[in-house]
Length: 180
Image (tube, rainbow, N blue to C red; front, side, top):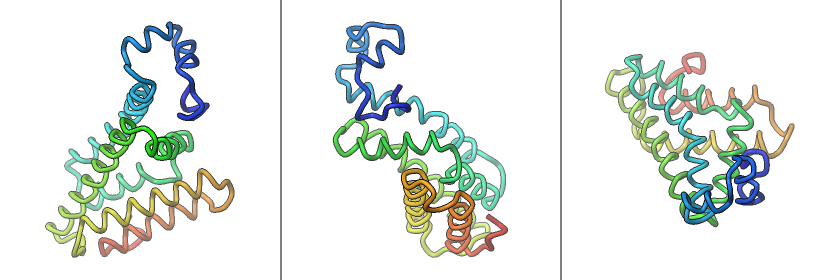
């Protein structure tokens, strides 16, 4: 329901009807609509976090893990997934519980990227003076291009977005685009 209508246009009555429960039961489990929305987003995003966790725990080389994380996080992936993220960021300006959830998830993704870059520097695979700054720049580009791709239809192609992200990530860690 939230994915179809967006956070701001979904009523608790709509959610209750779609779930086949009463609105009172929703408010028994969630004190506010804001809490319900934050929990719904967290539930939807757990799949992404589980995939990031697999990359984080992978025994693969830092280059392979970087490639996997960039592929997973690419704006060229699931349009529905990115629309939920973009909507969640927007709604977070008005919903403190959702803001805390999106912040926690964003920080986790950047932390994993920073650790992959640091491991690559330590192993000699990457050249990067500041893994934290690089993780901010890479995810900043990913997030910004996701907005351009999924909000402004036909402004930029998925192929071009993927190329830009791979090029930026490669430049940040001293690899060639073919490596990422």
